Length: 236
Image (cartoon, rainbow, N blue to C red; front, side, top):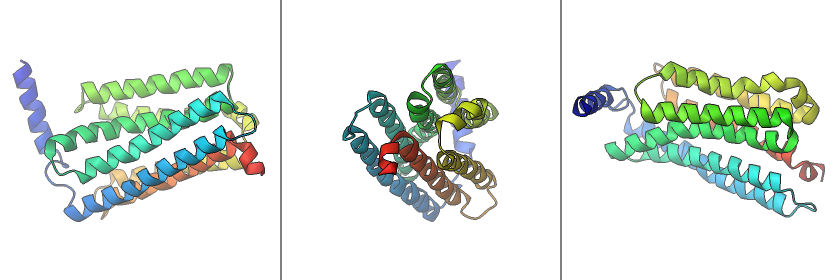
């Protein structure tokens, strides 16, 4: 029975668009370059955030922990995507594809974390923190256990995680500045618009364009974190 399931999975993988050479060499080069740049910028950005939090007049452990978690998920996403698109070996490509998809859940939860544990720390913040990380784990479990099933559910979890903050819009408005909220909204809208290019394969270089939207969206969210979680830096 296990042998049959393995053979079915193998056939499904081999018949998938990506395994049949959906992307040309040039496209994969663009995919790996765009997110390779994102990986480098993410690492630099993480160092900047942690240095700013560590050298503040009053060091807040919540900031250090939450920024470390956020930065790690950001670097992980771009690194996994770069390796997935840049490595031609089929078996490793499949592994990094799974990691890439899992990293999306981790980044969404990681982006929430600084706001929930610093700006909104309290009952609402902790409830949302538990909810968003629980959803991330459910999504990752779906990917790892059933890589060829529940694709609609996985996308639904992405969207639910991304927009569930509206459930606490009142407290968010009281905890964040107008600029912070605008940056968060801009990032969310950018990601959502990018999904159009990700989904419509008829658009030339659609996946590379999607990557640019991801970079733009995560940039908006990075500066939202910088502004909201490190207000003493902004005020200076």
